[in-house]
Image (cartoon, rainbow over all chains, first blue to last red; front, side, top):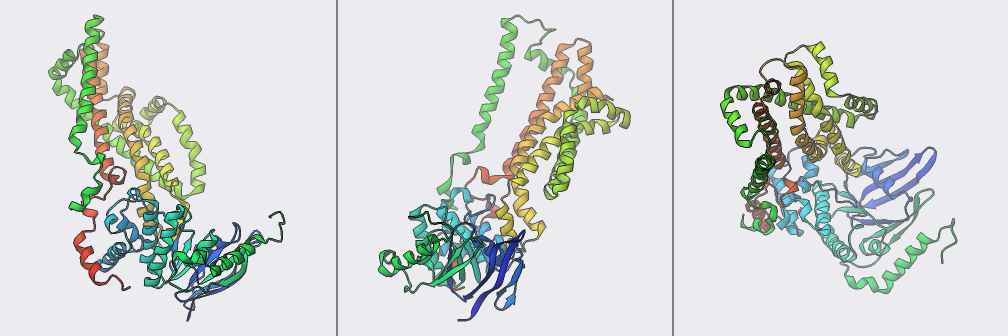
Length: 255
Length: 287
């Protein structure tokens, strides 16, 4: 597979200390990467740099071999908060990425409606967001990210605020959408189970300074069902990652 | 549109039934007024009866109406000048921290000075024409609009601004679609308050910078003659002016902020089902 995203020696310093130590990561086209790590490990800094919102102190971000360092508008970005605009309908919110730069064409409008119908928001198309449940709102936020129509999607704890049942159904939903829409996804989460369940590779990050500790390929076949959560391989991955996160040389107070 | 009925809520009921409550309560107020006069035998030169007041309105209608128009003009233009300038300044202050820090103290000091006191100075500067009166009304409206709009702009989530930036949006598009609508709710709260305050402003203006023909002047003339009925006739018209303004602002507010009361966007903004079904059958799985 070809390289979709190259993060080359990217770092960020604030007042001389590293928020993110020089970091390298190469992501293949259509790959699903999850990123786990305690707070302060530089996950969000990394996302802000990739999305072009934040300028790195050093290093380059390349998408399709093209330098997009500090240039916004090249990736889709979604956060834990759905950030749906309360005065826009679901349909208008899904089209936000387009309507912020120009008027959406008829084809784009129809594609947005098609996506919404296909992925369970058809009946909410003209609803204001306040009428929708948390899960539905996150779906709308994700479809907004899809409609922005970039190959690389950055999802920053998108399901973090959902209850665990909704979260699980959203994970399956996301895998369905991803397998049909073939995008490259980088997904931050606090939930190790979620990280393993979704990923082709799990990136484990550590704090002080924020850096990539290890990258673990998850060799569990897709499509993945709920059953794999209790499989031996799955639990082994989970343990390996938990050990990496909680074996912190600075602290020995954990049991 | 039959599928839309699913979310019809309590708020979507016809507006007609809502009008009955203000009619009842204002009617009750007049009844109370009338009853108080009868029960306590209040003489007419202290407090005229409602019917005497309305008789005075009808009797002096041409003069009252022309006064209403003169004062209404001061009220309307002062209201517009005050709210537009408050709104524009709020946008400038929200976009410049320096401007915000420099101007905020001045704004507060300006509010601490009584409008009447400024009014006296304004007459010296601007004479007895309409100008000083407009400034007084505008000053009354200006501050609540400024503070509320600033609040509204500050409620916009910083992450939302990062998102629009990541989507490559220009400052103007972000402002138009994200920040501006966020000011509507607080803006209309301020405008509703101001709608009634500005009547007070208009009366004050006419008392300070009185010239010819306003309702405030009419009222003062009647009061100086101890014509209580005439005074109350003017008071009723002031109340009517405030009510009309409040009512118009409320209608405007409802039209501008449908998401606060409705489940579904207004018809003209709806994506129609005809498009969606024809599209979903064909190109669903393709991207």
